[in-house]
Amino acid sequence: MVKCHLSTLMGRHKMKIADVSRETELNRSTITAMYNEDVKRVDVEAIDKLCKLFNCQVSDIFEYIEE
Image 1 (cartoon, rainbow, N blue to C red):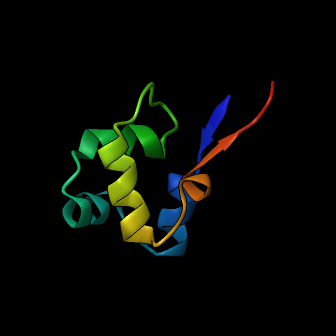
Image 2 (cartoon, rainbow, N blue to C red):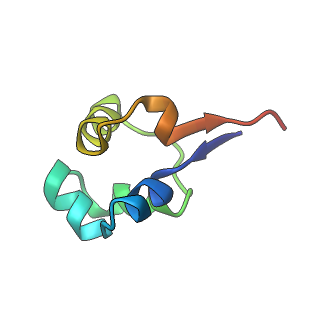
């Protein structure tokens, strides 16, 4: 299973979904799905924009957990 830590990053930076959407120009529905860990696939461009926004690595956003 892949766990998404976007909600944790957003909390640390005190950002709302609208803030992330505005800063990254990503669709709100994409961010909402990631925030709620209800996303099936993510575009590499979206990951790139999130890493730039939060000044982090991909591993800070996604974590693989063996079931």
